[in-house]
Length: 205
Length: 205
DNA sequence: CCCGGATGGTTGACATCGTAAATTTACGAT
DNA sequence: ATCGTAAATTTACGATGTCAACCATCCGGG
Image (cartoon, rainbow over all chains, first blue to last red):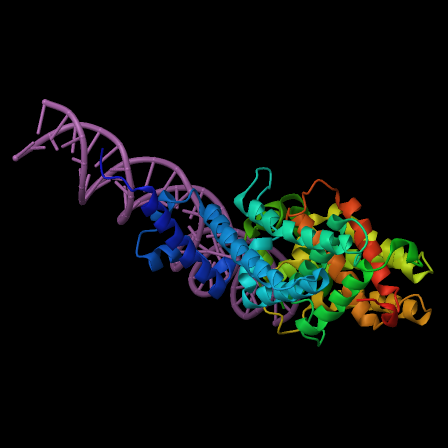
């Protein structure tokens, strides 16, 4: 048997590629990340990464997974600090926006509109669902405490949809209506919490 | 003077390019649209479109503008049918989602996350704001009638952000949680309307 | 001790892209 | 007919992702 890379070495180089790619993403965005550019920075030839990844898209996927991990860690860290579910929701919402502002390109790859067919279960999908569950739990807790009403999953969807919409409209440059993202965030959070805190039977419309 | 294209001819060819590009977008998405492919279909050489557009991005922008026009027309058409602002909001929300489902690629280009710097006022920005105003007006009307409370612009933001978030998460394939888009839409609309229909002083949280 | 083979890495090539520059074509006025 | 100029094409360049062929290095078995 010839000298073979053990799993640690393979994983090490994979991580190195992923790290460089992540930094390049942060600097120059998706279209600024190039296999030849990566290779140049890694000090290897353009084809070497193909020993560790199937394709460029697989490198992207690795970067996506890492980004989701960072994102989820931030959300959990903030959430763990707050016992009250509504306060937790507000705080994680603010952190959500902060993440997108701190790492706009990371957010872009995570939620890119032109992703490959999601027919098979991808790693980033798994990370996504890992971050989704705590949100549902928060909503469930709020419902159990009588602070909110409705189906926890529906409520979680409402929250996620609002945050994602706010962030992506901002990142797409469609929100430059004179107000900062943080300013816009508060009314959205207020509306969200208000809408969820009303007994359905009390609703007038 | 040699034969010169008059403005009508120029505009005609621009529209033709734009039409072909739009159809190709609808069929094969953003990355499926290629200058050489366009040219082949138009029966001209790859460079000819450059007589009518500065760059590929300018063609994209034209497609974007056309898409925004179609989108706005649909929204207005639906909105004009309903006198009650809240019903109007719900109906346009549903139409919003329907548009994104009917023309997913159009929605993609319109709100692509990696757009060029929005430093200068672009045509699609103008169309966007043209569609934004009626939404604010609807909210203002609801507030004036006492059906909603708060700043109309804030309310409009809440609505837009929810619809856009819902649609983009769906288009990015992040929502495959067993429920259809239309199912998800209704709770979001409900929450939105509920949150806006509560007097701030009545809010418990 | 040396040699065969597998394994990791490199080089070179290909097809494709957007587009700049040079070139050709075609028409209207002289 | 010819010439000037606008329109269109051809050619070419530098990218890109990736395939295929090649090379180099190290290992176990003789």
